[in-house]
Image (cartoon, rainbow, N blue to C red; front, side, top):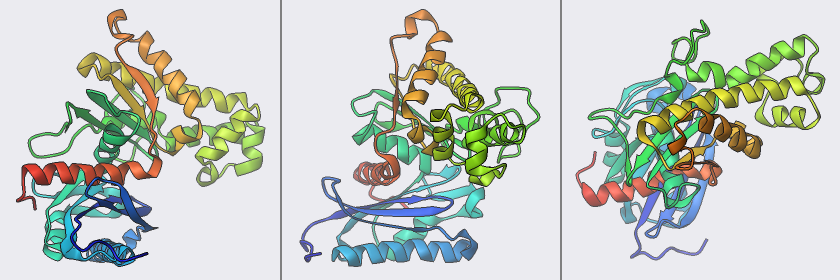
Length: 333
């Protein structure tokens, strides 16, 4: 890569996930310059993972021949509730973090403003500024994965509490089921409609011989039942698999209807690997259920769309939010 313009300024968007990290360098106009992806390696512990984050940023700057002093700001999306003003991740079970001041840590190293977001907030904001929700007034995001994440942007602002991030829609209670989710709570949206919940039901079908294509591909090993495997089984005619997926779509549709009645978003963005494997199915089924479950006057006031940015949503959103936040508050942690 040729040397970068030494007078230019840049932004970092960082997506910290349970299994992978993605770091992207953007120019002043938020156009992608370079990107790096690595395994998270949460087994390194808090200090080890913080060092891995900083090292990834340094290596990306080296790749692009950009000096650290050219950074205008860093945005980082992290799993779990975030104390956003102080840049502290309160709890992130999947990486073993509790009360980690990642914002202060990165600011001390790179000497620039750092904005710490919830990872799904970052993804939804990315879709809001450059993806499926571009041009919307209010965008709600629901992302089924191992769990189910949620985020909402209203009039350009990420909806957050006074201290903590919010929109933990996957942990809202929707049934009397005794099944537990990752939070330990019972009967939540994610216990009924996450990829993990869907895979759990499909294991039962495979065991009973009611999903032959799925059984041939994955047996009864829940770890082998991936989003692509589910999509291929449905395409091959496994009707039981299709019914399980439609039941998950129905539950998500009910959640969407509830949010339409509460805040009337004009765009609902569905994302995550499960949705990306079967976009048309999710878009159609979730919209159908949601429209059935709201007042008639609301039925034409919202659209259900599939996310467009894929894995880039989190880094785009984190960088864009960092740029917005730094312009409003140059004293960010």
